[in-house]
Image 1: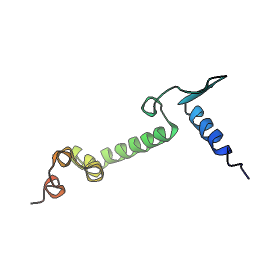
Image 2 (image 1 turned 30 degrees about the vertical axis):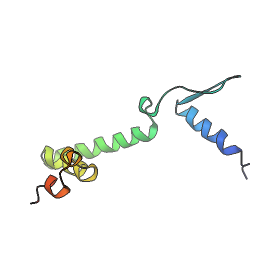
Image 3 (image 1 turned 90 degrees about the vertical axis):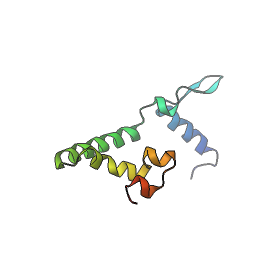
Length: 93
């Protein structure tokens, strides 16, 4: 069983593996990069999956709006963020 103090060590190791922090003797852990600056393996996998989906969608024939529709439905369209209702953004009167 892990000791209660083991989790911070594992967390720091995980951050170090991802390139976000680095241990320095007599200085502790120093921040090396922000998440937006690091190509995390998780994001790489998601990007590959998205690119496969886009390639598949492109070969099945939907136009650009058809390909973008799932993203708009999930994330909301720019018009939604400007204040339109979701039914207006979907073209429903």
